[in-house]
Length: 308
Ligand SMILES: [Fe+2]
Image (cartoon, rainbow, N blue to C red):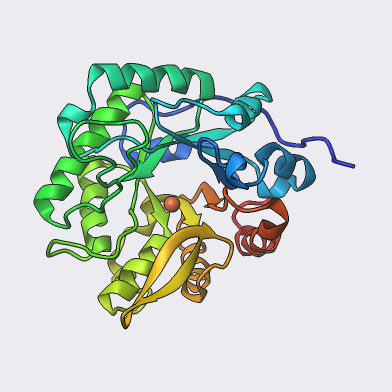
């Protein structure tokens, strides 16, 4: 029999004054702990039921990260989660933060409407190109940013704009990719963005591991000079190794088989990320039973930070 949900209802945004520095604002963010992701229609594609996970394994679903395109809105699983008054984060899937014209009044109005319903702890999402040209429903292009200082400045400006427009923290995520353009290492690029926007970050360890492999670099390359105190949230997801005509690459499929170096990165980063508030296992399109081993290992690795 399913157990009752033991989580506390969400308290809604309690963010600091927008003019306060990140080091002060971050102290007011809630510690969400270990959570699970969803996107519109994920369950109908064979994925898990987030509320069932929360009922049967509450320590694996302390919050729900809701992937949102404003054109699609929230699906039945997200609505059911809201109806329970449970904690969430808003993961955007439809904005190019480095393009000022993409943060138009119509899009911002729809974001505010969804924020009012979801009452997320913060906004987050891949800081890349979600679309090329005008925004279209279901576009989901997601190209990585150009890794230059000029691009970092444009991205930082968009983050600050969205933070001011919503009153919520906006955590950029390092996007996936196989080919990157620009003269900066991915971590140096995001370090520049974080300082210029004076923001925290969502560090996706699967995306980072795939990037390092694509560059022929060790998994932890450049991590020693990265401001880990700005990592507020971490993503972990499974990747699938591929080979195309001799070119080895990893597909970011959000499966349950997590690359070994992602576990190593997580073990190295969790004790050093002083402002870590949340970790998501991105496994929304997998049957619930197949996700449990991964959740158990994540819970063990994060237990010192996310005590019950
Ligand atoms: Fe991610």
